[in-house]
Image (cartoon, rainbow, N blue to C red; front, side, top):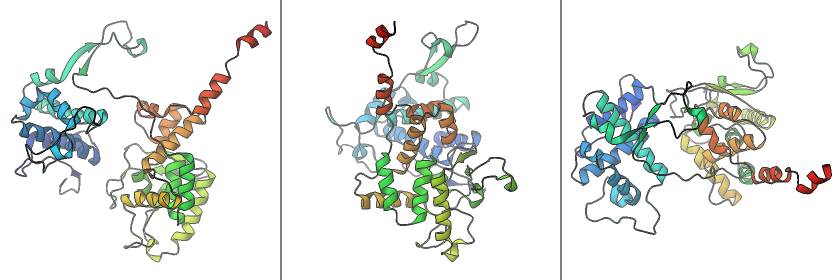
Length: 387
């Protein structure tokens, strides 16, 4: 990670001599500062680019030659596990996943790595440090005849678009959500009001882990009318605000602020937690909602991994194995909103998704809704009797 004098940070890639790789560093700086991307985005991109450059080095290619052999790189990604692709792997002394075994990386992970590599190459071509023909190696130009009519431009003309040449098929799969029964069991197993509130904010308000721990007390409006606070939103709610300077690293993913309504159960949990928090004198001066109550330093903002720990501990006491992950509670909220009749755009706003395509993965209906849909279809006998 690189920390600039301004305090801004981004991730970069080092070579075997621990020197910064210029082509990667330039792209990652552009993502972080030119596009105003998140630090976590540069971390994900840097990891994928590092894998590509490592493969190039171990196969005797420079990175531009490696672009011409992305098919081989994809095979290596799919079948070379950590023993073969890790930074400490020794050439000639590794095992690769063979036929019949599970791939070392999923299709989604391989595609994410390829997206990072494509971004680096396009940026290098744009700034003149790489030849332009590399873009043609990565992309093919396609017309829009295979798109639905609604997705084509108005006027009847033919449109053109760039399509990546290298991509694995990602099989559609239901969202990996936490079961409602497991969430209730974890709630009952929580040993503090603070921990129960954290679980509720993810499962009943759809907040991400970083959004929960990044909450400031000024973000929470529990009054029926918040106009006295300068907020025109009625009834209890909270505001999710991205702050880059949170000392615990809890940063909201989206740069777009959003207001999330709170139900009565969550408001009650807030009230109970406030009484619990008041018993910790060191917490009084902190503007963060969630602070350490017993772990040193008391009163300091909670660490991100503390959320995973409290959910795992609660699941263990409740006899749930494997324990749900924090993000699965958010998935459960999204699925429950849609199962209860919420629309896609409502779920999109509640979750803070920039694109509705991110919300559509939650549209797998509950089996009970599918059964109800079938039962609602009139039978042929009913149709005949109606005549």
